[in-house]
Each structure stands twice: as C-alpha cells, then as structure tokens.
Length: 496
Image (cartoon, rainbow, N blue to C red):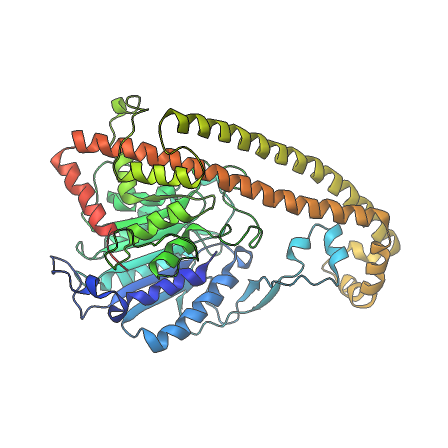
C-alpha cells in the first residue's frame, strides 16, 4: 500500500529537517516550541496475517533503522499485529514459483501459492494492534502530551468491505477487534486541548472517521474543543472492487498507488516523476492540506479522499440549500481544482460541456464495468466445473489427497508431488483451467482500472459541489461557524 513512502514522511518531523520557513513562523498560543518533540503513532490495522501486515512490518523496519541515525527528536511508535516476537507475517514475493502450482490452481489457492511467511523482526514495536492493547497504549501516550506538542496518528488497514459497519465508525484491528470512533475520541480528549492532533486514516468505509473532530464523535454540527483535524480515504459509494483496487503491480507505474502513498510521498518531497509540485503556494513548505490536494489531483486510485474542513462544509449546509444552486460554478479554490482535474481527464473544464462529457463517460464506464462483471460471472462457473473435474481425477488416483491437514496428506505431498504435477498438466482440462484463471486475473485488473476511472469522475463532481458549498458558506455562515472552519483550516495547513 506504499507504506514505505508513508513512513518516510515521518522523517520530516525532526525539527532540523522541516523547512526553515516552518520553524521561523511567529509563535502562537499553543504552537510547539523548538524544544518540543513531535509525536507519531503508526497503526497497522487488519485482523490477521493475511491482511498485509507483513509488508507494513517490512517498511517500518526500514524506517526505524533510518531514524535511529537521523531523527533523534521524533517520538515514533508503531503498533502492529499482536507484537509477539514469534508472530509469523505474510510476505508476497515478486516471483511466482511454478512447483506445486497445478495443485493450488485446482483448489483455487493460486493467489496464495507464492506467499511466504516469516517471523516478524521489528525490534521496536511499541505494542500490539488489538483494540484493547491499542487503547491502553494510546491512553498513556495521549495523556502524556504537553500543551502545544504536535502529533500525528496514521492508521491503515487492507481489509475487505464490511457491510455491517456502513456507519463508518470503527477501526478494524488485530484479532478481529474494533475500536469505535467514540472510544478513540474519548482517548484523544485526554490530550491537552491546544496540542494539535492530526490524523490520516485509510480503511474501506473510512469516511465516518472524520467525526473524530466532533464531541463524542457524534454527528453534530459543532467541533470538539480540542485542536484536531485530519484526512481519510474511502470510496464514494463502495462498488465491487472499489475497496480493493486490484493486485499490486497490475497497473502502469503511477496508477497502482493509493491515497496514503501519494499523500506521504508528497509530504516527503518524493512525489513520483512527472507529478506536479506538491508545494502549491511555492512557499517552500508542504503542508498536510497540500499533500491531500496533491493526492486528490495526482492519484489515480479508487479512493475518494476527504478532509475535515471539507466534511465541515458538508455538515454545515442547511437542508433547504441542498436542492438549490446545483448548477452554479465558482472560481474559488475548489472550483479551480475541479477545472484542473477535469482538464487532466481530457474533459472540458466547466459548464454544460463538462456535464455532458462526464455523463457520457460515466455511461461508457458503467457499461464496461457491467460487461466485465458479466464475464467474471460466466468464468466463475466455468472455472468451478473444471476444478471439480480435476479434483475428482486427482482423488481417484490419490485418495489420500481428499484428507487435507492429516498425516496421510502430508506424506502424500512429500512423496507424490512430482507425479501429481505431471498428471494434472497432461490433462486438456487443466490447460483450459489455466487459460480461464489467467483471463480472470486480466478481467479483475480491468475492473480495477474502470473503478479508478469512475473514481476520477466522483472527484470532479465532489470538488464542484465543494465549490458551491464554500460559496454558500462565505455568504451565509455565522461568525461562530466561520471561526470553527478557520480553526480546521489552520490545523490542516501545518507541516509534519
């Protein structure tokens, strides 16, 4: 998921590595002093070793080795899996090993065939990522913050969509545990109100995490008294495949990144070649908000990123305004971003021509997506029938293959694997199975590409809506709402 780029950004938290402009700003109430450390908490979510924890662990290890020499003033803590020294995590090597693959194919396990597992090797894991363990650790860490100390909480989970949590309220953690947003908000309330706490969350159905800026994380219009802001990444309306953008490496370079990778690559000054500069105001400092905008405009992924200031505008809008002013266009910052993204997508920048072009492209993409889904449905049936025939042939020749996880099965694997491979690969229906499974992989990649293209249209629509919202807000908002909105902007427009 690009965790290396994510974690590299934490290096900039060292005061000596932050651009000089950021360190010489006039002090304000609650601003961190030069002697204060910045605090970073990185939480690897997911319920078990299949959820990508191994890759996160590898990148955290790389970063900790780098930080020991270069960043003595950053207080970085990592929470991963259950933190046990003997924990075995899943690795996904780039090379696909052929021996044993026919057996994996006929049982539908080819996606896991090349995986390897090894004992985790992080020497400095602060704790496990089970909900109860994480809650105790964050309680200690948040309570220990001093006024003005800046902090950043990063959470990422590679998990399948959970339709039971459509309210978007819980972090999905190790051992299938969860931390509801109201519990995390209660923990965050232990920090001083003027200690800026920022967060970046990525998980399918993550938009509800933005309620962390509200009292008790409830759906209310007012902000918490604490200085909090952040960014999340989640699909607009979870479509099939939208939360799992396809196999890593299945798209051209620059098209298989995710929001977190684009966000933290921008913050670290390591945006991919050919991307626009992340420092959009050219002041020499890349803020979290600029990194968010960079990931929004440059990223070609199925995520629809959101910031807390954007969510504030959406929550502020009175219901009677929602049906009005739906076609007006504005030249504010969101309007300019919408036009910029539309131009990148080779669409008209604004006006009726843009609306017509977007509707046409949406229809074309939806038709293509449905065609892919129909093909995948037919392939599933064909693959299932071929696998059933091949399994029957295998077990007629080697009955012990029917009893997996037994000593008999283990002996069968150790003595007959070469003969099994020769038997299966000689069959015409095995060749048919290979062709269909390979075609299935191509179609899944095609579907992921269509989902990414649909997400780009979602981004343009949302930016245009935000442009209208901001224009309404500037005309109609109360002084109190303006003050809260500015507080969020000030928090978001801070560097790491």
